[in-house]
Structure formats: C-alpha cells, structure tokens
Length: 518
Image (cartoon, rainbow, N blue to C red; front, top):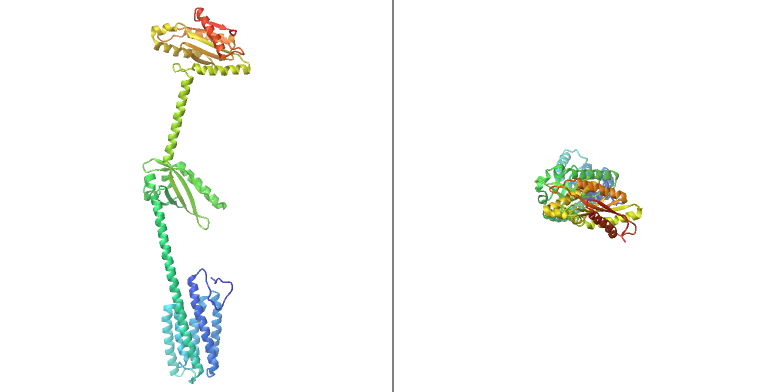
C-alpha cells in the first residue's frame, strides 16, 4: 500500500490514508531517520575536524549516511520494514564497526549505544527495549574483552574537537528523539481520547437509536419483520401476537407455507422471480405492495396489506427483505358488510319491482306493467308494420264460485287459470291480470284471424280443465287487432266491448271487434 500524496516531500512523513496505524509507525520511523541522518552528518563533520580519526571510520559513517538517505526513499515507497532494519540492525553494525575501527571502547562513539537503544524502543517499543539493552550490553562487554586482549587496532587516545562534537551531537539527538517520541505519544494519547469519546458517543447514539426503534417496533400495531433470501424470518415485532396469535419466537420458526395461504405464496414466488430478473438485467428493484392472507394460530386467516423493500449489498445481491404487514381485517369486514348490504338492497329493489309489476296472487304481470308492455308492442307494430292483437277474457259466473266455495277457493281458481292460459300462449305473448277475474293478453305478429285461433285454443283448454273443488270453469273472450292511430285505451275498449258481447251471447264464447270504435 503506497502513501497517497501528489508528490514525495522528503521532510514530511508519508500518509497512508487507509491505514492509520501504518501512518503513525511511518511518522516515528521518519523522525528516527531524520535524527539519524543529522547525527551521521555531525559525526562526519567531527571526523573531518578532528583529523585524528582513522579514514576507515569516515568511510563506515559515510556509507551508512547513504543508506539512511536511501531509507527515506523506501519510507515514501511504503517499505517500512527496510527502514526499520536500517535504523536498528544497520545502525548497530555501523556503530560497532566504527568503535572497532577506533580501537577502544573509551571513545565517545560507545555512548551512541544509548541513542541506538532509544531508536529500538521508538520502533519496536518494549521488545526493542529488551533486545536493544541486552545486545548493546553484551556488545560492549565483548569489545572490552577484545580491547584488553589486544585484538583491536591501536587507538588514538587524544581528546579534542571530535570528541566534543560527537558528545554534543549525542546529547542533542538523544534529547530530541526523546522529546519527539514524547510528543508523538502525547498526540497519540490525545487522538485516542478523542476517538474514544467519539466511539462512546457513537455507541450511545446507536444504543438510543436501537432503543427508539425497539420501542417503535414493540408498540406499533403493524407487524415489522425481516426475511433472509432463503425465506427464513430473521426478526418479527411483538405485534404479530395480536394479528396472528403467535409469539415472535413461534412465528420465526415457521416456514413460508406455515405463514401464508397457497394463493399468497404464489404472489411471493412471482415477486422473487421478478426481483431476481431485475437484478440480473441491472434494472432498479421494485418494492412489493399487495394484500396477502396469513394463517393464524387458531386455524383462521387474516388479510394484511403488505409492503416489502429488498435490501441489497454493494454488489447488488439481496441481503434481506424488510417488510411491514398491516392487518386489514376490519377493512375486509366492512367490505363484506357493504357487499351484503348491496345485495340486500338489490334483493329489496327486486322485490319492490316485483310488487310494482306483478300480481301478488297469481304471479303474472299486473295492470301497470301490462300498460307499459302494451305501449312498447304498439310502438314496435307501428315501426315494423306488423300486426298485434289483444285478447281480453273474463271468467263466467265467477261471483257464484266465490259465494258458493269462498274466496280462498276462488283465488285458487284464478291461480290455476293463469297456469292453464300460460300453457296455451307463446313465449313472446304477454299475459297480465287486469283486475278481479278479468285477464288480458297481447299477442305480437298476430292478426285478427290468428288471434281468434289463439282465443279458441285458450277457451277450449280452460273448458277441458278440471279445477280443484270447483270442477269445470268457462271463460268469455274478446279479440281486437290494433289499428294505426289508435290509442291503448281505445284498443282495450274495443276488446273489452267484445267480451261484453260474448257474455251477452251466452258466455263460453268469443267475439271479435274488427273496427275501431267511433
């Protein structure tokens, strides 16, 4: 991971934007490199000024300076490991080689092990302290033994500017490194406190948000739930108990076929098919909204208005489904009551219409409906120029039937008579009760001759029929064919007059009115 900056600034520490810990390590290493470079430069100056230091020592320090400069490049390239090795292992090797080249551990260079230990602690913390102190101590011991045994080169024990510059540089660099390390530590502690406060605040806000949403889910009447892509319920609010009679724990253990009716399961499956098709095609996913029928614990069902929102990952995959189910049982009940009320109203209207248009005793059309039907028949006859005739019939001696057998028997005779007449008529003919024992028939596409034949057919069927209790009953009929420019009243008047003539002619007969009256 390379540091993200527009161009390297060798005096500034690199920043690794996606790795805060590495950025902090880089800052410490960068400071240690700058201090080490400064110390190496001072050491070279001291060697040059002193003139009594072996040339090999100058070469060793100079080469290490070049290595430190290269380490700065490595640091900005993100190679912290190389830099740390340069500051620890490389520094140790160079320092030890320089002391050996001087031929004595009594030179100021030996004190630089203190600076080296501080570098190790800065980079590796406690392990650096333990390893640095141990290695430097053992190294000094070995060098003491080597010097006492005469294994080192002959030293130059004169004291001059070189020693002063080296010791001064050592004091300054050690103090500076200690100060910088202390400052970095203080800033890290400060940042840690800020981050800790932010974390505590975020945790409190999250806890408050979770508590708020928990209270909303707990007290909301709507059922809030989540479902995994494989159809398993992962959360459900306590309101499920009021809707389906199940505890949240019981509801979460159910499979989809234990939750919904088959028809509602089909809606879910169709939605999943459409959802995956939209994802595959790169189309925006759609929210589901519809009515579903849920299974309740007591075996009943409840209808809910359901809204489902899919939650997608950054890769566009379905993570879970977030749903809200609102019971519409009351709404459905009101709809059923409304439908029942509508049906009852329609039945009442039908009954009222029946009462207004049919005869309550016989069940055939009454006078009011007959007048409407006859008016339509007249209009059709005039428009299409086809004949239409009217038959008026009256029961002979019906008063004697009522007087002898009673009105209930008379009513039965009227009912039976309509059945007999109805069997003699065509499906297009109109039969109505005009009033009392008088009935009327309108026969379309019937001229006078055809109407007379129809009347005779009716008369014979009635005469041949045996009525309960009464026995034989006869009728008198009047026939009148409609003529243009004739009113309904005039047309009926002619047919009724013909009935009167039939009764005067001995009853059980037919008379025809062929010409309009007046």
